[in-house]
Image 1 (cartoon, rainbow, N blue to C red):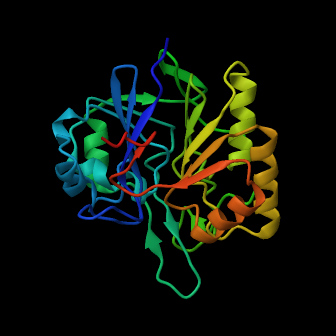
Image 2 (tube, one colour; image 1 turned 90 degrees about the horizontal axis):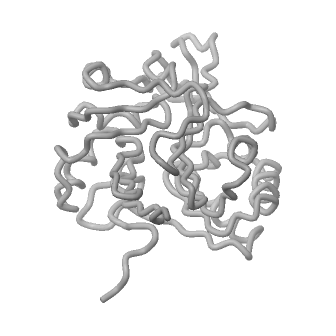
Length: 272
């Protein structure tokens, strides 16, 4: 019998004082006696938040990286993990070109690359079970036509779009789906998980869904997919967007929709 997945939010855009917030994501996962760090934040909040939560950085030996953007990989430079799991393409050079703003490098920082090279690397190329009842999707087929990207490019000139094909998610046997930014699209991700593991109905989604600038049409399609897959709980973080969360609450009154901050846990810790 598997334990239920327990998650502590270590890094998010919002934090419970005195924890530090930043635009990034890191989750501490406990599954059936194993601990994993899922993403590492942007690099300024992870260590101080670990200290506040009395988690030793040395205890972080296994890291799953959802994709290569530096708001998910920046904290890697401060850790000494033994094993890492990621999709090929994680360490490519990439940037964003937002209108009216300077070009911004989004690549895995060089110090993080050096840490990565010193670990036992698992390049996840297909749907893979990494522990009993713990699965990584690997690359997720893009079939839905969702607008999952943004002004992301592989070159500063903006001639080569970055489709962020290194995005992956984590699925547990208890039906919990953990997301980084969901650049592959939540519809694609849910459909792919159902195709790969039809015996595991996804009931909980936790993480960022990259809906900050989603159109009404995309939000309607997202809500329809969540309803079709009979999702019971959404724990929305990081890049989901407050306006999108409000609209999903209106569209999905039957779904429990939560927003957590760094320092909070899911399921919520009991009050004594």
